[in-house]
Image (tube, rainbow, N blue to C red; front, side, top):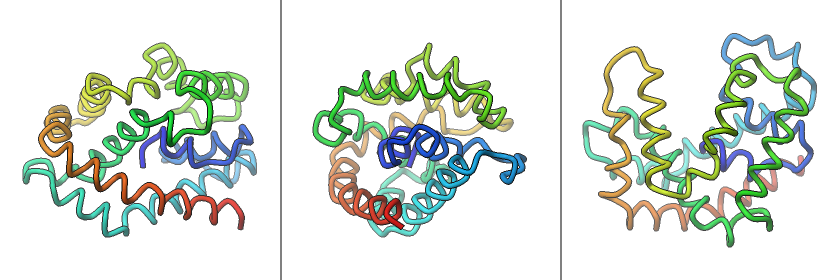
Length: 194
């Protein structure tokens, strides 16, 4: 899953929630130096990623993408899932409006900035100013996210054009997400209860 889903599935305790976001920002970071709640959140993030990667519905979604995009199918489907979650936030969210949820996350990020891994610290201002989490709801936001990802890669990739795959396979991917999301929510609840 991408960032919005990780944040939505995480416990509401700020550092645990932020730890679930940190999972994508800890390459090269000594985990033992992080706050224990951040480490717990990172472990939850990794468990969710393993569940997602092994799930047959997610594999089916990845296989739906056209061959030039399959190398990046994992990343693309994660972002597409965030789109469906944001689009249907009124039904699938935490009970607050998506903008309110995002504002809470941004406030927590600012409040705990010094505890976060350096890469996430650098991303916080952009995340908020460019409204990354709220932007997932629209196709233009998905296009912007994928183009930013492609720019960070050193080699030329089709990732920046990935939003066209969402449009081309929208109905099937939407159906896959609708079938998968309840299973993921149940897994995350069980994970948090451990």
